[in-house]
Image (cartoon, rainbow, N blue to C red; front, side, top):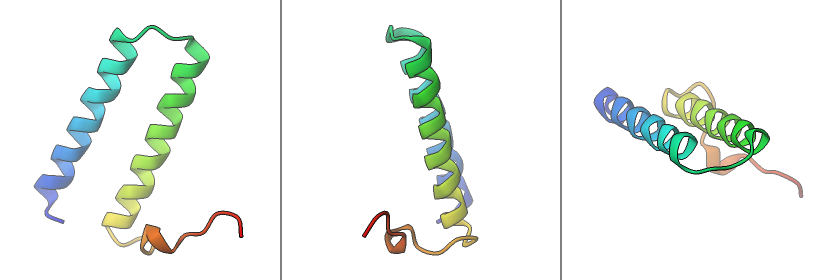
Length: 63
């Protein structure tokens, strides 16, 4: 994936997260959980894109 596409995806995810945090009323604890889940997902995606971890489809959760 070209670097410009990675940057565009990061900007889009950041703007969407900012819009959700700014304009959708929800409890602070829910916002914190949402932010943590999105950040963890983005970090895992970035590690996969740059080849630091293998393909995310091969990761199994549970049995």
